[in-house]
Structure formats: C-alpha cells, structure tokens
Image 1 (cartoon, one colour):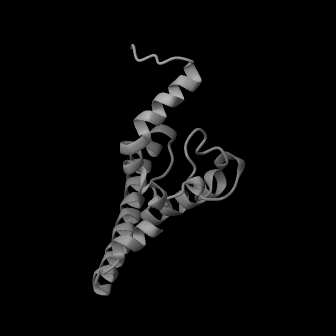
Image 2 (cartoon, helix red, strand yellow):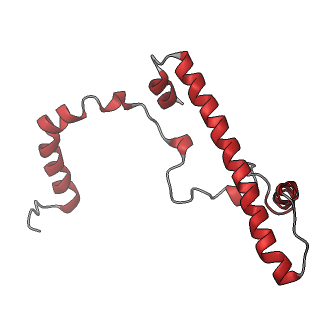
Image 3 (cartoon, one colour):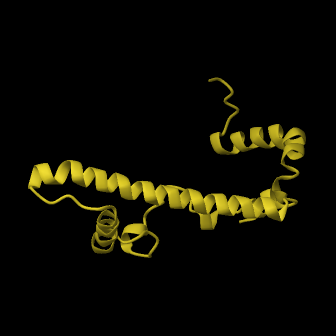
Length: 132
C-alpha cells in the first residue's frame, strides 16, 4: 500500500480517475471476451463430442458462474488449500519494507565490513581460509 501511495503522490486527481475508469473498462472488456470464448469453446466441442445443444452468451456466463460456485469458489477465502500457498516463499505479512535500518549499511561495510567478516570466518572456521 505504501508503494501505491508513493506512486500516486503529486498526481492530478483527474489522471487517477482516468486510470480507474480505464481499469474498470478493461476488466469489463476481458469479462465479456471471456464469456464469448467460453461460448465458442462449448459450441465448438460439446455438441460434436457429447451431442449437447449449443448455448448462448448468457448461458455460457451462467455456466461459468455455476461451475465456480460448485467446484472452485471465486478465490480468496481461508480454506485449507490456501494455507500453504506461499510455502517456502516469503510471506507478505512478514516482509518489512522499512529501509531506514539500511541507510548506514554501505558506510558500515566500507569501514568495518571486511574486518568483521574476517573475524567471523576465524570464529566459525577456526582459521583464515582464503584459498578457494
């Protein structure tokens, strides 16, 4: 959310409204296109393969909604299938985007980093093994 606020800072409100309207129009166009693709696929395959009737656009959309309700839902939710979605990956709720802690990192590394690294190697390996 902070990234969105940062990118929208100083933007003209008319530009923001324009992008929102463009997004709504794009989503609507994709939904309409999806309905026609689903209708086309049904009418091209199902009557020939299974002897079913051809369907209209609204029947295709209704069939999609019905299948999502019966078999898959519409995403989101907190079912068990979503609990391990990011298994092995960094979860967004644990990511801290506060970079203020890193402002002195470069300076520290230039001044003390090499010495601290060599000391760490000596502590963990027991010797200075610079050979590769």
